[in-house]
Image 1 (spheres, rainbow, N blue to C red):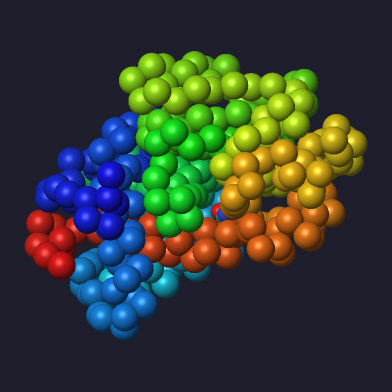
Image 2: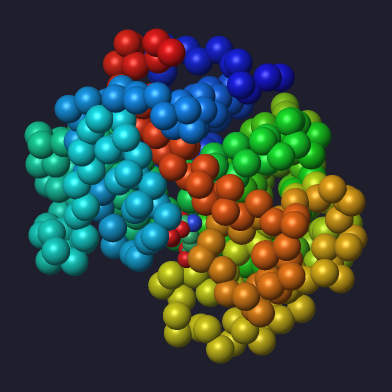
Length: 325
Ligand code: CP
Ligand code: NVA
């Protein structure tokens, strides 16, 4: 399958991006394909003001470097405007309801990106508003990240189906979205995490169900060596996610055997690549020689956040003319 020349259907049928579980493999391929096209346009310096005059409201209840900058720069490159809304500064942070916030923002802006704690809040915004809602990370999911990861894997390997991704670490939001996203496109996922830090059972079952049709195999193990063996992609994330700061000392102890280092990486396929959503803590979940070494694609991965966000905004907020490339 050639994602550089994939058929992107117009109009795109989705209204929101809340979880990749709502997307088919075909819709994921369309998003990645558009991101690859937009990346090429950007590299060649060809302007592409596809969302001229559109405004994206960006609500942040947690910190961000990549998500904030890639959405804000992305909407600007598409000819639109990005409005940063810290939840500490808007009335949402003082108790205004999600329902009212959704109804009011729908009167001003053309789409909302939200980074927050509860997945239910993102779903409520979509339910009560009348404009597209994009999940920029919750405690449960991080779908935009995984689209950029799949794009990066495709650039590195020229395929997705049949590859094995090993995720070493916490069964968190990134692990959840990797389970869903990879199982949609037929990649095998092996997750190694300590007892008590596994991904949610319901999400593992969803991934296994997806695997019944896509062919992907899902395994959750405790031994990082078992997960890493023969992997095409080794992935890790921080041991302590945003909102878990009071567990940091305990987590450092529990996760110590789960560091991605040369010994572990040696077990992967000889041409395996390393990915990390970033921010990274060198010396904790990954060693310097891995994240700063020749197998690491983390900065390409971070750049791809920009191209993927532009594809997401174009397909969700654009009109039919948007795709005339
Ligand atoms: N990977 C990611 O989402 O990074 P930020 O927290 O900096 O947005
Ligand atoms: N799991 C991390 C991802 C950061 C992009 C967190 O939620 O903090």
